[in-house]
Length: 371
Ligand SMILES: Cc1ncc(COP(=O)(O)O)c(C=O)c1O
Image (cartoon, rainbow, N blue to C red; front, side):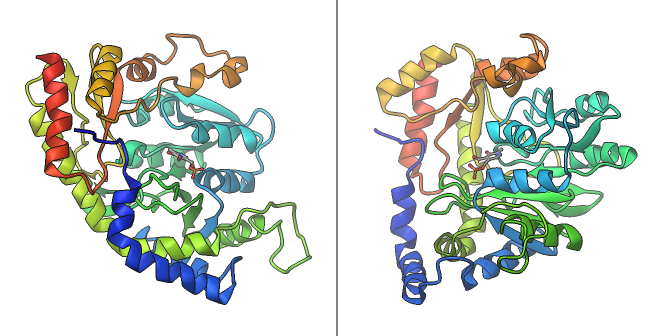
């Protein structure tokens, strides 16, 4: 049986009748730039993220870059972020004029290690940029403690974790809620994916929200009047309309992903070369990815490929070992947990529309390989 890693067509079939009229509405109104759907989505995601403001922008990458621009980083200013993440987390720091300081991760959750963050703080540290990797929140309570001690802001990379929650001191807190700002991505493969690029920043800081609204419009609140130099980073009205139509499904989709994850974890139980993803106590994971750590990964990949089972390695090279960051001087072995994760991880199909037969085919192929 063929099981693709991701099947957006399967989702499209279930929501076509809701999304296509929303798109037609935008086309009929011809309001492609900052049409009403943008503000509606901003309000809806601010509510979801327990924040006062949502600021739409062109991508998740820009949702990281624009707040970092607000910090006006100078050469040598440091922002601490995990080495094991998607490239944008480190790239945004560089593009905002700062230096990414890469730290290691926890071996079980693969999220940033708060002790490593604490140890990496220097007088040049201007912000922390934790990532809620694969859909579960990092240890925000410890990270917020470190940030508060230093008097620096936290930029939450919640691009993979929209709707994820963590129970802290008896209360559920949303991904994106606890930092100075939180960044979401609407890349099509995300739990809430657009039909193109898109992103959003959430924040409860009124002054920051105002700055961000300007920065995404060339630095001006009034057309052709520029207080500062910003850029063009708007969320497209068509994307906002698609996302508004999809948003009511997000909770059910993430619940389905959790259900599939539970199936895999149970079906792979007892296979010693396979370590299923760990969910930290207090976390409600949204399983943007279901990522195993395995032995003999290359051979497993070849086996899955031969069986028609989709899979991917997120991420094969940690950021501190990327050629573009070679000048930062990190050697092989400097962040060993990230390096080991990069050698061992493999992600399986986890999209909500997977059938039981498909789930069984994926787990069966893995069991067969390690038999
Ligand atoms: C952890 C993380 N940060 C940032 C991004 C950047 O988002 P985008 O692709 O929308 O620019 C992504 C998504 O691809 C991501 O997974």
